[in-house]
Image (cartoon, rainbow, N blue to C red; front, side, top):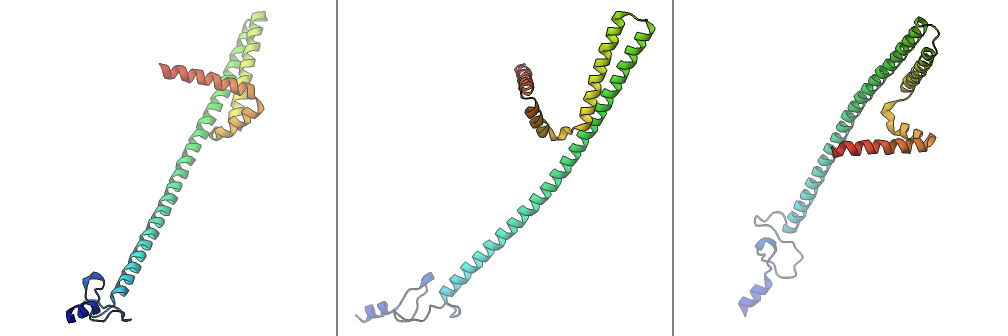
Length: 182
């Protein structure tokens, strides 16, 4: 009976460390060295763990933000370079179309002058002039529009000429379909 009363008066705190205090005591269990209370150690370790998690999360957030900023800078630089290359190619193409129009005009005019007033030569000169005008209009369109903004160009074209745009899209789809099958 005396042994059972002693066993009941002892508590078994966390980590298997026995306390010599009677049950119901208000004092906190101490660690094996008699220093910091055990539940205070648990609170400190939970606080330290939460602090470490917070620091890791902050560092991950900072790293992700840095990577996002760097990626945006690189993408901007690549986009700017591509835009410049498209602009240069567009200008070169417009210049070549204008040069082609001038060559057609010269040849059509030279033939017309050398062969006299032949009806067939005048028709050929008229058709050459029409082709040259179309080439000049195409060159002017290339100079006035930005091919880098293809989406805006397509929307404007769809608003202005929906039938022609739908027909062109259908024809392009057929050509792509045939190319894929081969």
